[in-house]
Length: 468
Image (cartoon, rainbow, N blue to C red):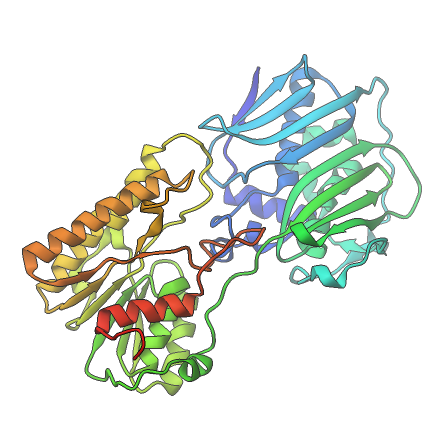
């Protein structure tokens, strides 16, 4: 039975950050979130739990002793979600528009009597953190205990959870929000993913504390146990991969061993502020090329990259903001010799097992339609070579990437079309998975070294044999 639906917005997100004290950038910063495996800003898991719990209390007038919650897939801002209640199974699920389950919650032991809300001594139990701790799994030990928690603003509860607070008590709700900051700000902290939570309501007058029950280094996983005044909880979280950064420009200068000088070559790298594009920009600059990198939303990263290159480069670098979907040739002020086309949306993390035409059209627009349009415009202005990185997934399909693969096939066809129509060299190597923000996973997956792949692509464009 459908009991509610909604979208979460930026204002909801900001308010929950204030209440919980959980300002993890996965939730609080759209720019930082795009560097994570989610690729987008994610709603706090505990926020979604409290919303569905509020729906359950309002619709069924039911309160349970224990809630077993699994955060199965991320809930993204401004995407519709739908809450369903199965009374026979005492199971609540949160699904997206594709009917994919994002959260499941099993409810156990109905409570008949009113709950007592035990007051917290908040001023004695707070930890002031400006940023999440960058906790390392190797620094943790089973049995470690702590009882200082991040500060949140209990006064804001009346805005998000007014009705639920009247039923469960504001201190109990506040302790539930605290679970979010334990994971997002302390352990694992900065690089965390909250995966499961079992919450049981009770009443105590103890000093709240949390201890580490178990550490699974093979899976980058940690199990925590929280005992509070109004509840106890078992928490499970993963250490997610850290953002992948290219080597420093100084280090790349030492790594590059090409006895050539490209001081008369101007290279445009679309999507050059991060990932494989950033590696390629640094290598080309190290051998003297004049570099223009484009970015869509990564203005800060682009500026840092350009500044790093220009301090020591034989060539020169600059950046321009460019949304390939709104390309205008007037944005490119000078003739371009070589084009490296690394423009890409988020590839992984599709929420459905079914082919999604909306996702496919987005991929097709970037990988095929706009690629051809941009290339054509630059060819008419003097472009002589194009690098279009394709994918071995075309030969060895990966489940969940059907839309991406079909779009890349169309992109290769556009490469052939450009070659025939304009008699231009277009290199379209099918490269293997490369270790970047786009491809990072919780558990290690075999990936190619980005320096080696970038060098290979540059060799292709410059016509250099591998052993040179």
